[in-house]
Amino acid sequence: QVQLVESGGGLVQPGGSLRLSCAASGSIFSFYAMGWYRQAPGKQRELVATITSGGVTNYADSVKGRFTISRDNAKNTAYLQMNSLKPEDTAVYYCHANRGVAYWGQGTQVTVSS
Image (cartoon, rainbow, N blue to C red; front, side, top):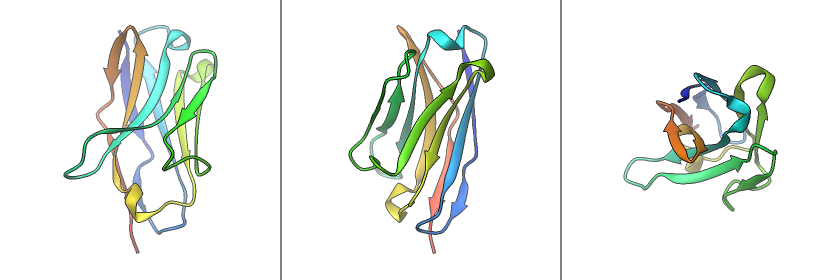
């Protein structure tokens, strides 16, 4: 089992940046694929980015070139660097871990507004 705690959300102006962190505990972090999802009010939860245990990444088209997912296995932490933020990026962002069984964090609010 793994427990996930997100941090780093907040209010930022359009064009700004935020770095989200997902701290994991309770299992062998390096074996898990990690991901970030987001959900805006009235919308479905959507994939933002994933990174495999081997470091292979993929991104939603809407964030490609602006967001970067990474992981530091020594710190049991995954990150989402978000640059050039847009109002449409406003959502609750959730950390996700998967190795056959999936786990979710509690979410952290990101608000992009002038």
